[in-house]
Image (cartoon, rainbow, N blue to C red; front, side, top):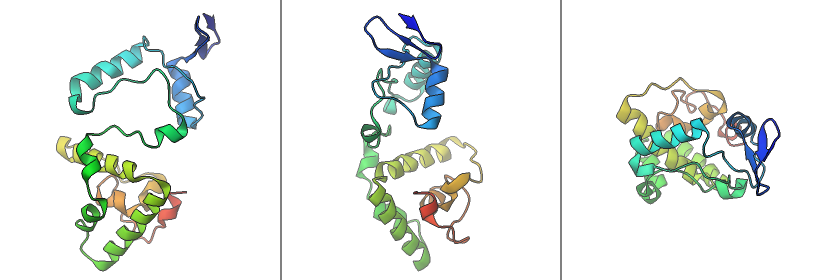
Length: 172
């Protein structure tokens, strides 16, 4: 095993990153292919134990290899029932005016063009957990406030329709 400060090369030649280096790479979106998580790292062990004890319906462990960007686009951890939601009907039912319905229709089209339907399903799952647990959310942060769909889900509190915020800022 060879120690390279932020990572090690194990006896099989696999690169295994330390947690701090992995977090930094994740934040920067620079995960190299064929990366392994240090499964005996205390943070990973604590995460897996917490997930198992508290989220039986979506329990998962951190993988030993991080999938490629293309593979990750379709990976979202939520119960299967969320894949059955008709997004058009779900969001239209949250609307009261024609302007709201038009904005929802526009945003759904743009989300679909980007392949972000699973993201929306995860947000529905997340918004239900927020309401169910009484978690506090912030007003909003960054370009996500331009999404009226996220506003309808109470992921943030900025009505992008009222302030005429361009959804394309969020979906760049």
